[in-house]
Amino acid sequence: MESFSATTKRSAEVAAAVAEHPERYRVLTGERPTGPLHLGHYFGTIRERVRLQQAGVETFVVLADYQVITDRESMANVRENVYSAVLDYLAAGIDPQSTTIFTHSAVPALNQLMLPFLSLVTEAELHRNPTVKAELAASGRALSGLLLTYPVHQAADILFCKGNLVPVGKDNLPHVEMTRVIARRFSERYGDVFPVPDALITATPEVPGLDGRKMSKSYGNAIALSMTPDETVAVIRGTRTDQERRIGFDPEHRPGVSALLSTAALCLGVDPAELADEIGDAGSSALKAVTATAVNDFLAPLRARRQAFAADGDVVRTVLRRGNEIANAVAEGTLAQVREAMGTSY
Ligand code: TRP
Image (cartoon, rainbow, N blue to C red; front, side, top):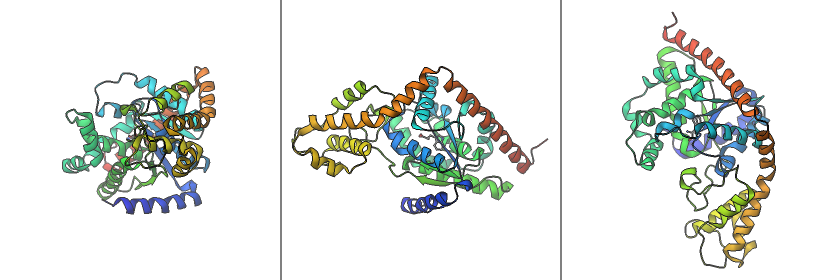
């Protein structure tokens, strides 16, 4: 496996190549619809997707509904989460005319790719995946077959549309690496059908949650894009900081204070240490007020657009229906090539 620094370096080279030749790239990326999208998603990947779309790169976004049941039993709220994510995308500037938004469960030919792909990896390789190990530990449950094999499913997400560029946070890098292995092995065994995709590591790969840990729905430390300004103020007020009057940026020793500084600084486009100096001796309540205002001001236009889209009852369903139609046509085309390559077209 490539080292992280080699991947980072490669990612920077790829970013330069994309800027020069956007037409050579097709992006596939996506989310698990396990809860509302939050600022971590926005700064981690959504903003980058909008940038790539505006640069003229064709983009596919999967709402990975089958990935919801990798480490939990219930599909409760999945449909609601999918609809809410589509609203967030539209509000953030993703244009459904040029970006295909689709769901796993609506695209059978994509899912069928999982079978030949599974034959190309060993059980030992699956067990070695650090992200799967971490997710297994966090779930506190027995390892499901789907959790063990979901990186292969993710390879199917990427390769069904011949995606060659995958913007991800670093927690998803092992999956892109596995996709590269699968694409190479498929070519060796059956011939050239799939590209070997590159990861594009986003500039802000990890946004801290309000407690300094990774921002995550499951930690309850996230600011959802869909929150009202009052809800935003309330979650920020409720965070744990410390008693020191002097505000300072020190993620290791002052995680709560530093997480608020990082969040505000991202929204204001300034440096967190400089922002700390500006707040100076005003203490935690001033820091919280600054952060809440920064977040609410930053999200105000997005939230206004979100409301306008939400008011039109059909928008989300139309976007998904169209996206799923396109994804099905693309997946069937790829599966036909796979059958041809494998000698199974009858
Ligand atoms: N696993 C990703 C996440 O944790 C979501 C995802 C599913 C994805 N399929 C993908 C990301 C393909 C990039 C490419 O959010």
